[in-house]
Image (cartoon, rainbow, N blue to C red; front, top):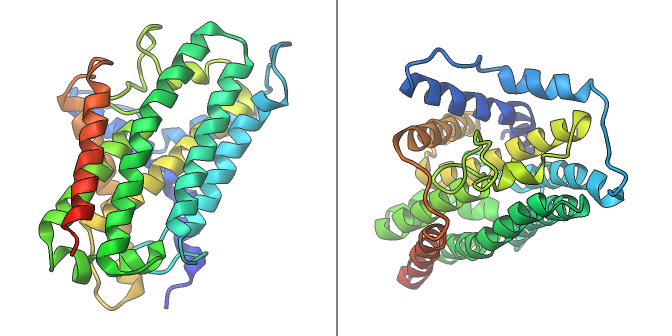
Length: 301
């Protein structure tokens, strides 16, 4: 069998490449050459070599935000199965720990933004918390639907039976779960239509405004933590959309990696084909994702 640590190492190495794929897809749709695929690695490496500047109003909370974000992402990768192969850490209810880790990372990023004492960053933190309050229930219900459909209490075992216990018996359940996870992925990773990672308009920024005061290695950790978070959500969605089980762990893992990058391509297509929603419309879409996930739970027999 494929060593469990391989899936984690693949995520640690290839996570920044997802950002490069998304940017390249957006450039193709815009008729531009775009950035190199490896540009995120260059940006992170350049930032890690620089010095950091701290405001006298900040405390240790500000410096802890990026570190906790990366730490939560690394532990989250240890809980994430790849292609039906068991994760490095598996136990009953591990999907709950994964959800709590993602929430912890967000909590410290918000605290770091508030620690600056900036009303501007406080505005972004307020919007981030409001959106997450609606996205987290949708994610929890989607995971609950998978666990209930497969009868397994660990994420690795549940993902290993998505095809036989979810798609084949009840395709609507799988479609609803995938749709809910797709919406949550866009919201949690600050992508269009919820947020624009490339915007610099003060009144529309959400996630980007919370990290404006980070610089040097801290901002590099923020970028890497965001990449790890994107890989985790893409891995969850790919686990549902690409339930390929060939009998070979290596082929299954390869198909899962291809599925993860296909999700990145899909994110680029979405960002290139639609505009950002008005803030008053965002809660409606997130509530819709929660309703789809709740319906999936009810449809599971």
